[in-house]
Amino acid sequence: MLAMPDSIGFRGSIGSGYGNMAFDKAGNLYGLAVKGGYGVGCDSDGCGRIFKIPVGAMDGGAPARKKAKVTILYTFPNNGAWPNGLVRDKHGDLFGFEYSGGDNGRGAIWEVSPPASKGGSWNGENIYVFCTIMDGANCDDGFNPAGVPVVDANGDLFGTTQRGGPDNGQGGGGLGTVWVMTPPDGANGWQFRSLHAFQSTCPVDYDFGVDQPIANTLLSKTGQVLTFVNDSGRTAPCTPNQNAILGGLISADPVSGADTIVNNQFGIMAGDAQYRRTGPIGIASSPSLMGKAVFGTTQNYYDASIDSVQPGVVFRITP
Image (cartoon, rainbow, N blue to C red; front, side, top):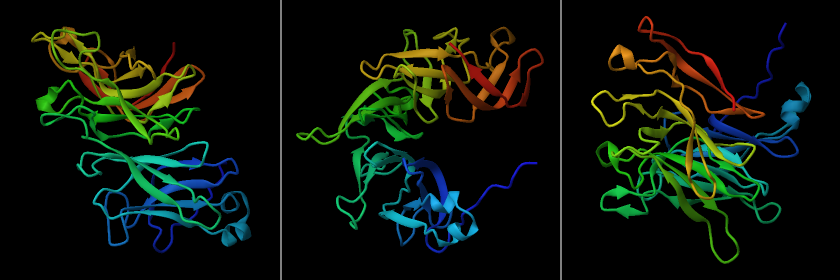
């Protein structure tokens, strides 16, 4: 018989927990909360909170949990865009994004840092605002970040945007980007660089139709930046018979930004029967890595032989 999970309630003004969680070496847990519940938005007390649950609240028995105090470390300002994500680096700094935050309302990357001295306050700021690099009305640096970023051993922060980039397909909106933030080096603050922009323009490039990253980023064992995308290419590209491949795993080189379609053996539903393909569709999770294999889930599974949509699956992608 499975044991019931321990639970810790969010009382008073802490709010409702959502988003990603992170742990420090001692086992303390850090998370995000928004007052009123996920999706409700900001209120007079701010747009979100970072809270800490001490290890004693989780590892001890009932008396220890009762004495342990859940604390609010930082409250995001009431700027109309609640934070999401949350990843921790080796210095204890926390990072995430706002999908439509920042001065341009197109998204931002935030950092919340522990106090410089004991008893001090946690401090937060946006370290990058999207739609800063413009070409006319287009956001060459991307916009609408999505998915929890990932930090490597050097402190570099990698993530994606769902829209934007120099290739302004989709009515000028762009198909998304992969980006990297390099930490301060003493002389400069955080430095932003766009690693890769997904393409939609004919004539055909090898990754034509790969677009809209939808999941958390992940680093492979060799340091490649991995994520799932909504569409991973087209059959018969740039012809009237082109059809979207509904899902895929891509990687981007952390230095050059060169991308690779790791796997796009997902379903194809539209068009003539000869172009349809059986396979999972509608990616519903972020990638999980075990060894060299990547696991994920989908909302549905398409059976082309009978043109029918079935319940979703757990899938594995191996080298």
